[in-house]
Length: 639
Image 1: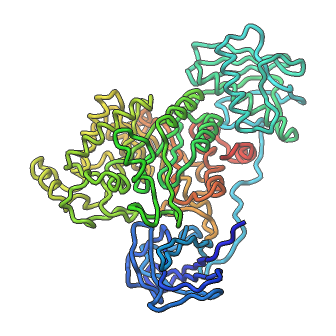
Image 2: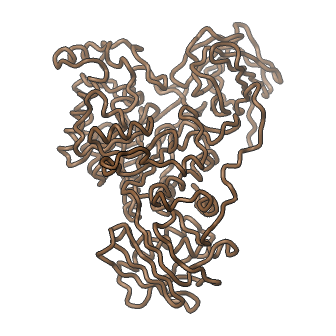
Image 3: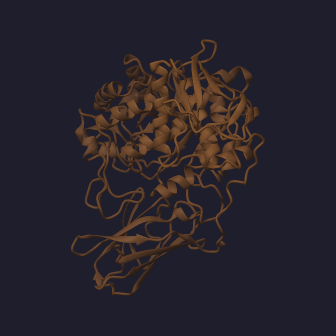
């Protein structure tokens, strides 16, 4: 086991500036004295006043990257500590993850040395035990199904079959469907007894499958009796969902027989509440291996979620292989102390990269499709493109002042310029490759968080504005996105985006799907403007948000505190007028990865809120029950 030679401890104090200050202590645990070094740390709580530090000198900052030097002539001996303070922060720190996420030293020789980082302490905040996020739960009916069906009227049995198996004369398609759900179960629960079998079993129960044209494609009905189970379904998705429900029922009865039972009689009639039941994952801020994405898709299928929104690009990295522009996944993904892309959000002394090859994409698309999950890819444009612009310098207006605007995340000049002709040539080639990789009718183009004032210092942009009668940043973005929509339409694709796509007159609402993330009210306004809407408000459905107010709780807090009970009980329809509800296509969880430096953080923040959103997406409002959900949700697999 390797022990770090240096450790950085930190605390936030409310005094020392309008937003308080950080107190840092660097401990030298090595055997050597160090001099003429600098320390780098990454933090989402950024320094905006370079002079507001004591016993240290500000060297440079790039978004979340911060570099400081000790006073001239300073030497840090073995066992000694260097204490320094950093003020001039852009906001207060309120949770343990608001401090340094990673750190390293650059020694006089130029060598970069890792520094271990401790969680941020907050002065004056009481240390508390972890909050109880789930009550014990209470079952009215002793069945383990998630999400809860539209109608369940069944009698629990005293025993359960060893497995369910297809009745004789089962079709090949039905056998393949049973195999798909059996294999899904095996991947998610490798040590549990399989609830399905292809071969008859004397201790099992026969399963008869039959398609019923009267049911919607995603709908199914199950009838239970003592000698067999009958599953009727509308389409392949409905058959999969019915089989998944049966697997959940039997697995729950076996794992916790004092709590859950398998039905001996009665029926389940089920169909989803919304057509869009999504989960988004940001793979730019942190890279997830293909095996993690495959397992997440498995979990979505288990929860009857049908959309995987794959956020493939952002300021931190471009993760999708584009053969026309190999620089995107060489220069545009590699973060290192000596590279054009500096460490961010937990990166340290070692270079960090990672991207998805087109073969990876095809494999994941096929995997998802077999589970009735549609992958909707996102390249975030025109903002959030710091990595893209470093990889492809010709996308910039060379006459634009270098720090003429900054994004809300602190990146300078990070938006594709609508006045640079190469911008459109670049996107045409990117879309050409994407449409070959992704069968989804939608391509998500972001459209969010373009900095106010973007491009206004660009001579090319000013000429375009004068020529086309365009006013300001929003007008330029609208001009840009209308052309992007035309590109997608020519390729037989529909545009999806974040709610800012509607700004400045936006793009034509016909065949445009927008995601309302800033507030629930935004979604209603988008529907009034004629857009199809997916509700994904940060105040309920952003799974990087903290779940309790205690400072030890990890996560972001800009949208408030989002405990699982709030996520579960939130109603996306809100105040939607009846005449607009047809434009509400569904709901979506969003997993932004700034805070997910470990699998432990991921599972702690995503679960049980992801299954809570799955139930909101599937179960009618009248069928939701928080205590019942709490009693069942621990059966849900995690990453």
